[in-house]
Length: 74
Image (tube, rainbow, N blue to C red; front, side, top):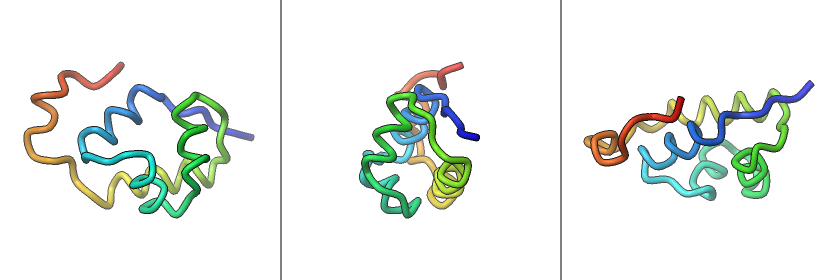
């Protein structure tokens, strides 16, 4: 079984935190190529998906970032 993330939403979440791919990889404990694959819409393992989700809860969005980024993708 594998998971395909909502790439637009993941990019939005990274932008809210001021993170790049390498930041997410470091915080999630996964490789940068895995982050790149997820952002390209390629399937990832459920455990990797879980690591990404947990990493996004470790740091809040930058205050006010949502107002300059616009709406979150569907």
